[in-house]
Image (cartoon, rainbow, N blue to C red):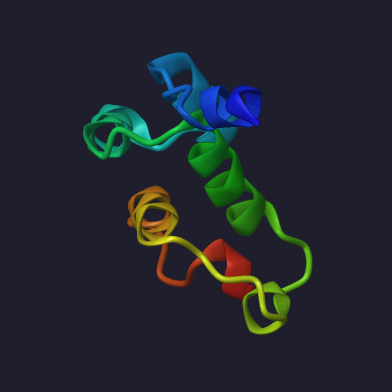
Length: 85
C-alpha cells in the first residue's frame, strides 16, 4: 500500500508536461507546474484531452479540480476544448 502512495506523490517535471500535453507554450508549462501536479494528474489530463470519445466526461468519469485546471491551461488557446470535439 505504501508503494502506490509513493507513486501518487511523484511530481510532474517540465519534461513530463511537454511530453504529455504537447506544445502548450512556455507560459502554459509554467502555469501547469505552478499547480504542483503529480505525474498521474498530468497523465489523466492528457487522457481527457486526447479522448477519442467525446462522451467520456458524461460517462461517470470525473476530474479532480487540479486535473480540470491542467485541462483548462492546456486548452486555453482553443475555442472549444479538445475533449468536446
